[in-house]
Image (cartoon, rainbow over all chains, first blue to last red; front, side, top):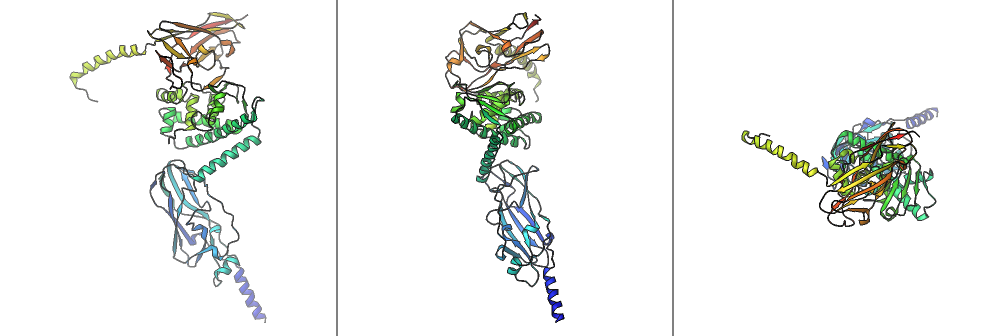
Length: 371
Length: 170
């Protein structure tokens, strides 16, 4: 009797004892399907999971993501800087055996993953990609002699929490847009606008009607996303890109940094400063004006209300133009008006182009698009 | 680049020929002057004169934007006082498409002259020497014909010698 009791105790303790599944049990490697990807080509990698232990390893099936990533399980960087994961983060019910894929000792399973739809690859550059996930979230290894269902639903086998990383693959990617990227931008715009409104940092003079206020909000929202995009563009690798050269003239790293510092200040004004809008100006041939010594009050005129929210000479661009005039922002002048004159100014005098409000506006509006 | 010996003197001659040609091309058809009284009393208006003379044999339309021809509505002057450069306190405009009314016509040989009160947009509150330089340009110049609305702007440099004046304590 006592003997049987001892035996069952032993079985119980054997069952309860944590058996470690270690990260090195599973080797993950990635390989790109091409060495470079044009804007029209998907960026895909093949992920291979190899069980290097002597026991089966059970992998949650969402890590063998044949049809779309549901977790940020890759570390993707462009020119050394991490890029954003835009895909879903899925909250799952408690997993069952049906959620596990068995990788037998020595076996390799692979899956092809499309990364360009879920990581921000809007900028051209040299991308580095590797798989990286916490082994605790990836793996499950049941005890010997227990069937898979019991293993999945019953006793927990301990998995050592450790980052499981693959090799790095490098490839050149041409910048592209994606539906998720556009949605993320919309979301960021909305969130930035909500932040501004809740912080009450946009105010209107009493001469702004409700319609005007809404047209101001649309302009501010567009200006915020323009400034964010310009800062992120200028945070990229400095070079004589056609967008930069068209609006600011011959490339030099000093001039690039000047442009960058201007947009950082414009973004800061939009993010943190109390903007005041006045609607009293009625001149139909004028978009807006400011007194450069009086930040951050912007007087909006007839052409502003008639303008589109984005694009050339838009509401968003006008607000960027006006902010650039403030001495505490970039202290720009009006050396040239209009795209033709601004392009010619860039060719003749990069210094003046960097001091010209419309050059900043056309750079940020980037219409027509230049890489 | 290797130039055959025989041609070298010709190249040099060409070089000297090019200089007067380039100078001729840069002779402005518009002559600009800034005018200021040599002395003014502190607290009194300081009227800056701006004159534009058409030296060409044809009519010239000049876009008045950011020139004294439309008043002080932009930062196109650099004013230095006894304590250094003065901040421009006036407005700066983002313009739409220019209309014919935004141009000033100068017939052949005509001179346009306007005056602006510098004290409206610069703080002339200290006695001492001041200098004014014109650092803007003409945003558009149209020759011979009435400017059509909606065309591209062709900016032209405008060389205007600077002026100096002194503000005397009261």
